Amino acid sequence: MSLSNIQSKIETLLFNYLIKEGHIIEDTGYSYNYKRYTFIDLHSIYKSTFDLKTIDFLNDSMDLIADIHAYIKMNHQSNMIKPPLEEYQCDMDIMNDQIDSIQL
Image (cartoon, rainbow, N blue to C red; front, top):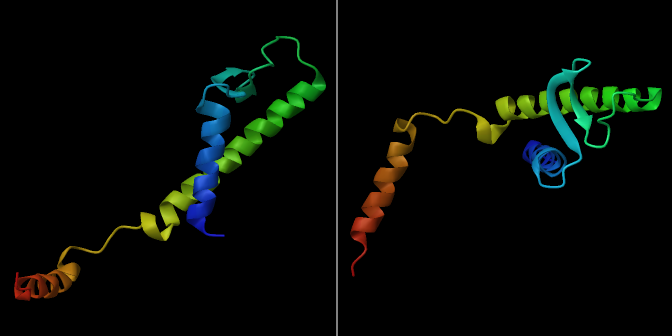
């Protein structure tokens, strides 16, 4: 399993459950008891202890997912800064010479 695979799974998970129509998680912007995320069906003011624990678990999980996603974005090979163009110039010169040598 590669970092890009994990990154893709995280992005798909967040899209499906947080953004896509029919999502089940809502970003409340820390409006409820300083918890950013809650489940759509838990809008009642009177929540059970179990409901509060699931909200805590959801928020801790979302924080962890965000940290993993940020780490992958910063450290994954394909997200690294590319070398300056000069390093590729030699290859481009060779390719241009080969193209010029083709007779039509």
